[in-house]
Length: 416
Ligand code: CTP
Image (cartoon, rainbow, N blue to C red; front, top):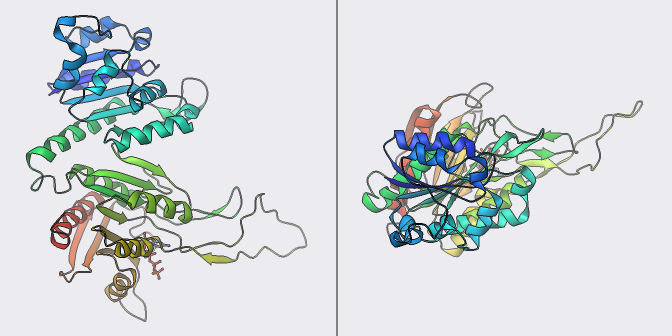
């Protein structure tokens, strides 16, 4: 594969030497295009020696080869790391002041940005708007990792590890090939947008306390990885999680059920599939105290009054039905049997109540399912198909759910 590796002017440029190594050792031909600023961190000689190819950042070198057009045109994949705030802004606004930005405008294959910058720069509305613009054009922008930054501070803004960027780049290139080569067989969700919610919501009582739940987000993360592997573009709505979101998703972080509702309704608008794997709190405290609730000697302990949260899954189904949209909606149900019925009876009633197309059901209890690596589920269909069981690691279960989503999508919406 021909890869263009764009390097931005950030301190993380030194880590990209390892990424380049991973590409060349995997047999890919890499042309490195550092920006002017990048060469202040790592010199041209390093990039030439490691890639085995000449390196330039000027549109006026080797003009007869028309590099500013040819490189982007011929590349099977373009990876930009570290993608600085400046490079994201230039790419989002279509600037073409140097060889790298020209190449990005000429891209014919998939493009992946791995951002790295200071947390405030990453979270700045301007940068976030640029990221959103790029993503809306089909560019993959990874989430930066969290951790120690250049100075003594820490937060989101670190370049993801070279191995993670490499894996995301390979998955992206594969899904691009899959989309043109064998969409139906190996990549059942190629070209599909899949929104997945995961983790447990937290409902704030005061600035330091919340009501939460035991969801680890492992099953949701495994689903996202399986959907990426199936060729989908994945919008990942992450409530509180004990594990990282897989590289390559479009990540939206949320805290409460209300925030998740807003994110889900927005992400679902043009999604082909919505999978609600998040453990959403059914109730939230009726009052939020702006200041920490204090214990006062001689007074009774406070009473927390709860109010209902909206049912996001139900709302998504209602909106889809009202608009007549062709969208497959998948719910998850954590059930325990009781005097009123067994797990499957409760789940069948829930499937009807929620009106979704598939319901993935598991039986819960303390220490069972939540936080564990193994899972066992039954997938119920709202369209009359037989219940299907799946068991094994959460990745095995995720692969089974994603397979079923692909099959159900083809069955329920054959025109899609
Ligand atoms: N869900 C949702 N919004 C809520 C509660 C749940 O979208 N406010 C979604 C979950 O993401 C999951 C499904 O609904 O996909 C089932 O959640 P569960 O908590 O099992 O169902 P409930 O409707 O809360 O039913 P009950 O508590 O009565 O068992």
